[in-house]
Amino acid sequence: MALIAALLGAGLGLGLLLVADGMRRRPRDNHRPPLRLSREQLLRLGGCVAVAATVGAVTRWPVGAVLAGVACGVLPRLLGTDRAHQAALARTEAVAAWAEMLRDNLSAAAGLEQAILAAAAVPPAPIRAEVTDLAAAVRAGVRLPQALAAFRESLADPTADLVVRALSQAAHRQASRLADLLSELAEVARKRTAVRLRVAAGRARVRTSARVVTATTVVFAAGLVALNRGYLHAYDTAVGQLVLLAIGGLFAAGFAGLTRLGRVGEPTRPATTDNLEGARP
Image (cartoon, rainbow, N blue to C red; front, side, top):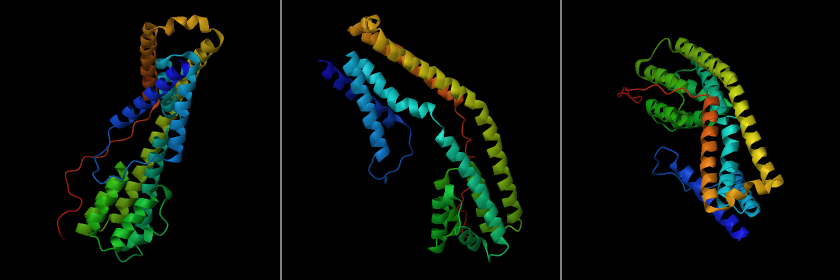
């Protein structure tokens, strides 16, 4: 019976993880390739199932197995390093560096397209793929406004939106002060990055507190199960499992609130009504 309860709990926990992942909002893409899990994701998923099965076998609580499996999959991402924020900062810095490269190349290049091709020779690492694709589109004969529009959407960065708008307008109107504008945009990007770094430093204490609270809760629960199993006999009944589910939901809400307090929000992209492709020259 313990093994069956463990397997049922692990399966239910895995199902809840898949449901939660499916409910995440994603942009529609009718040509999206089939889902393939990476080796790291498979190992993480296997670890969650193993933890859920172990907890279910030890406690004989299906709800406990579910909560353990979900916590194993969610808590490391919620309380770990905010990789998305760090990647966004690196991308903003890279856009600033790319704008300065375009500015420097404009004086020696025959035009904006040549400056883009020259800058693609040594692109900043965080946006290397996007800059390379832009240069490839220009070499293939794609009109510059169309190539810039695709570049803008692939980066999805507020600073890149401003740079692309300036480049698009320069492609249509032959702006004579494009180099000065690119310098100003690069300076704005670096100021934004500095401000976001100061905000992130302030939020780091909240994230540390969330880690301490989470670790204390997990250690305390594990200690009760290992050292004072009789104290938890009330959860062996069906009513006790429902109560445990409610308690787990309350803790989940608390952890989510702490994580939200410690997370640095990303700036919104400016709303644009103009078409980057513009009218035909």
